[in-house]
Image 1: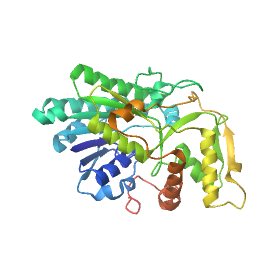
Image 2: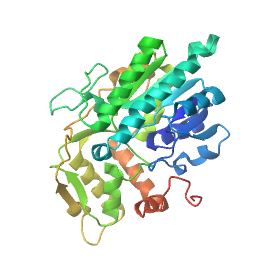
Image 3: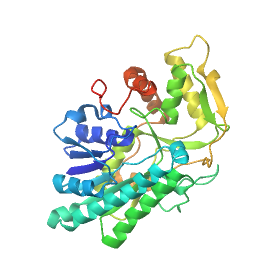
Image 4: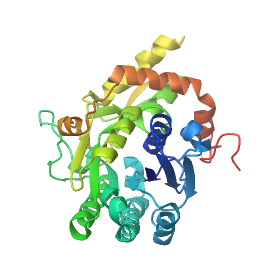
Length: 351
């Protein structure tokens, strides 16, 4: 298939593209506006593959999206482009509304116009896969059952509200216009090439540099952690096997509290690079909790596992070890980001 993937230079999108180029015969048209968190480096060998084309365009630009469909004639869409950092959404929600809501609307309209012109087998096989988050379901208490596909929506932050709106738009375009679309919701991803504003890389790099390790509240907030490469495999399986109108909750069954995650990072780093000053857990600092901080997210992936024949390969310990090893061997990339010298282009070729 020829796949149009939005946000393909982002953390999850680049993992999907690397997997597609390495493990399938699909061709990729990568639409990315290249915001601060995008990285051509993260595409690795896919960037120079003859089965990958990078289109620099904004998903909120309807004319540009229609042109992308007309020019590249995709067989399916994987929509991953999104603003996704909760703290940023609290400080500045406008970008989240524009990209996550209006961008999804723009992409849906372009896809609808394109789909209307398809015929025969190409029309029958066309799919629109919208990738979303478990945060749209709200917060769980300690003893609540995990989220499933039928959990009612209850978003709490500007980020999760914008993603909930985009999910509803996709389902509306399926029911109203017959666009063959489906949604997948996932839990917290971590792994290689993650921009160092998220919890695991932030804590890891701060610990390496001997800086404080900030933990919101008392650190008891819980998340279900999914290694990004496992998620990439699942997303491609959903695209290939998903049924229009359905929802697929993708998780790894690896819940940890934030404090457990921080202690695990410190222990793994101490084992590799002992600090003469002592265990890095000494750097943990409890800070004022952020507004509307959901207590717990966790997914029951049973339906998705059965539907697509997938389970996560990495447990948290193995995935974290791979992640730490990767950051230790890719200092040039994250040091450029931490030093404010990174533009999202390939290192060594940035303007």
